Length: 430
Ligand code: MN
Image 1 (cartoon, helix red, strand yellow):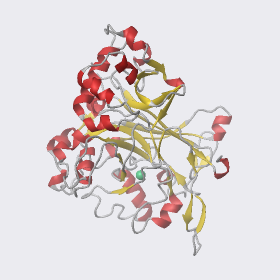
Image 2 (cartoon, rainbow, N blue to C red):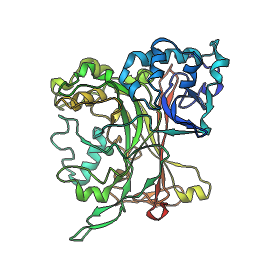
Image 3 (tube, helix red, strand yellow):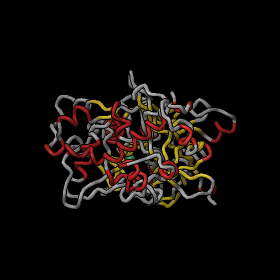
Image 4 (spheres, rainbow, N blue to C red):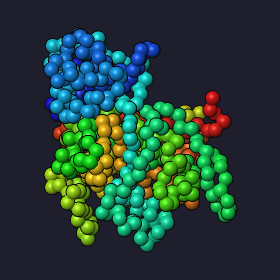
């Protein structure tokens, strides 16, 4: 399958969606109700239409039947078996050698004519903080000698985020109002945030999950991952600085969180799994419930990540977006399986369609930072753009685009598509 080609020409060599990817999403077309499709090249394959034509059978047909409501929750709940069966049948139907080309072609729509939506109903959203270079970079702004807090290498840090304000890529990002303490002032004010930032993160969709009181053992945790996306945890740093002690982020994060709408499956990412980068000498051995040899050997992900910016000025003079940063999911100090094992370790129930954020994924060097907070040292140093503009934090009209791609010698490259959001000023709202 590594070198397999499709009869659909735009799929072959596609930067994000070749035959080897086949991510799931929810789309609408021409005023019809949202339904589940698969991204392939520049097209979307309409799965209910494929089922109606009798082109799927067995577990794969069951899987698509479970998508009938135009959401992926019930499909996520089914776990790996039906997902594998569907993937295999879709690959056969789309491969060059398929005898069904004419019948499948009738179920393809041009992506450019479709709108994408949230792929599942999110019951709970949890944001972690496992990008260790980000934790060090941000910690160093406040504690130059001791950037990491003492718990960091023992426990995957996280907080409960807000599911109701998750939105698919493309949704406007309204600049939030909030309470903050202006520098040098004794009392807070309520005002539009002046320190709006982005956070480059990996999103993890939860599959079957666990019953309350029954933790997921780390050796089985991977079975409960339904897929992955990109996630932008928009953050208002002035609101955050005033509110975060002692219970952590609250309104500085809950105004909107953007995700890329395609769910990239664990099967598509399998060639890009690798050993967890070894812990630096002297780091503590994790407690047994977080430790699994196979997970250490194969549980990390090598996904190249990028952040791009397009300002209103750049668009008005026809300049293309500018790349701000390049990073990788290898910056995660804990594997995804460790996050599931930890989250459920107290008996907390994880459910199909829950979403995790990894935390900001930065590298250690300039050019690898996953937030403006790091790029501008907390707003102290302006970032110079090629357009001649400067940024400390985001301005109205700024658009942030996250991209993720996987490359490996001998394998087709795959990608996540975009996670895009444009900042909307208070005065621009209808
Ligand atoms: Mn975050």
